[in-house]
Image 1 (cartoon, rainbow, N blue to C red):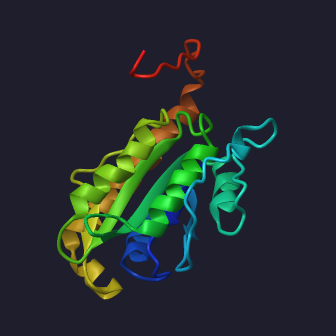
Image 2 (cartoon, helix red, strand yellow):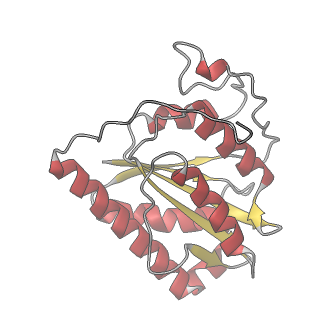
Length: 207
């Protein structure tokens, strides 16, 4: 059992990382392995719609190999779950995180089906729920069951030390980790095959 966690904050060891680390520790207590991947503080290019990842043999591989997108994509091949984390900038995910997540999900179109997904956001004061909504949409367009907690998955603080003082936020993240571990174990034990998909149909709104 394995979960990929992605830190979309430019700070490698900041508040978002602290929240993801809390989740990682709780997953470990449940017997679930995980890794945290850092988007970084260097510019991240957005998707340029080159469609290279749609060519035969290129599924899951972005043509832009200058950052961690392909590394995370490869890790996801073996993962049972994915947790996206981001700091909140102007009530949204960070610009680098948005570009990173856009490319990751586009190049893996159809490949994340039925992997469990969850998002967490970190902010000093407000804007968290809008950013949280943004993350959840990646999962709902990818046939990924969204794992919930007892509250929206946000932590508050200006420093990593502050995060641990947000006792309610810490509890929310621990419950999230417990729930994801439980659901992964349920699927592993069920032996049920994935449901068949109807034939693909694509239409434009103008016709």
